[in-house]
Amino acid sequence: MKVVTAGGPTGPDTPRAGKRKSLMGTRPWLAGAFLLPALVLLGALVVYPIGYSVYRSFFDAAGTGFVGMDNYGELFTDDRIRTALKNNVIWVVVAPTVATALGLIFAVLTERVRWGTAFKLIVFMPMAISMLAAGIIFRLVYDQDPERGVANAVVVGIHDTFAEPAPFPGARPRPTSDLKASGGGAFTTKAPVRAAGPAELPLVAVQPDDVSGARNAAVARPQPGKLVGTAWSDFTRGGGGKPGVIDPNEKALAGLKVEAVKDGKVVASTTTAADGTFALPAGQADGALLRLPASNFAQAYNGVDWLGPTLVTPAIIGSYIWMWAGFAMVLIAAGLASVPRELLEAARVDGANEWQVFRRVTVPLLAPVLVVVLVTLMINVLKIFDLVYIIAPGSSLKDANVLALQLFQSSFGTDVNQGLGSAIAVFLLLLVLPVMWVNLRRLRKERRR
Image 1 (cartoon, rainbow, N blue to C red):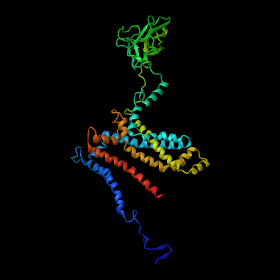
Image 2: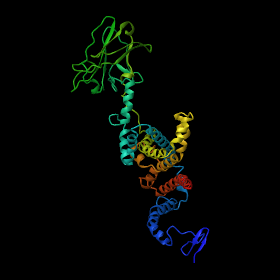
Image 3: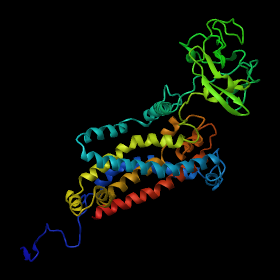
Image 4: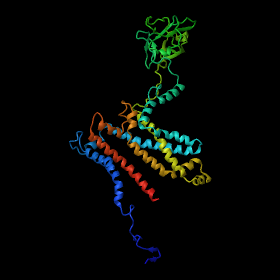
């Protein structure tokens, strides 16, 4: 006999009030059977290594002597580790922030253009490249030689557009010449010159490319009211020739700036002609010293030392942003697609301009997604290793050092100390845990909504 109540009929198959049925029914062992392989792998690959690292961090390099907290004390006294800590702070502050900001800008702007999908594909494409390949690519991009390094090719191209390169970089007079170094890379005659005879300015160490196609040097002919002379490359290919004398087939130095100096002041100046000859007004130049300014011999601009001690960390961060800005853009674009358009339109109707709509409506609505991207990238950069190891040259590796790289060097490098390496690993884990806690807390809030 069934009893009918206001809540419906009850019978033998109806669960008792206050008693919930488990997710797997009456067979919890089945859930345990499915979870067991994952738990075994988790214990073997995560729990055991963490536990052993904590244990090993209290022992010396040999692993036999207990040193207590000495390894952890060394984290803050060793110069290499302190540099790694400083660089990790720079990485955590700069890389996730810039990558997230670029991802936000790209996501918002690509919504307004027809070719937005193609642009997103191009920006996201570096994510398909491994860190190893990206490191090799940017090692070449940052190469010091402008003939190989793209970054310096651009910098040198821009520099040479606005600054005239020196005509004969590295050229100099012979030690026995009448020219002597006068400071700052300039060369000046040892004695004043007279208009009675031609002045001779021979130079050596001229690069062959700088005189390829140049005319043969000529002896300057006397000109009324002029002080004349010749500047040439005092070198005969194949040997022979006499120093200080214009021999056949010796090349003229065209475009060389020549100054007449009296009492430390330039009284006249000119440039050499195609055959190396020059002429100065005798009234000003007679009795003056002839000076070849340093601008004639300055070394060619070779670009920026991207991988030097000063710029190596920003340069590597730039390569990281190139890879991960696409990741941030895709996630933010997905969040942007779920933003109610009526809210944006309402803000525009109320008189807000596009910047105000972006700052006061779009960004607050995207805040949960931005936090996800920012936290993910922060966890990622705390573990950065391969880009630094591949891009930084040996001379700058200590200046680009990060904790993960120092962990590798301390544990498996030339000066092996696995006790110190384990302490670095534990310290790195402690740095990651607060970020993970923020992420888990955010996920719990999302579930409650």
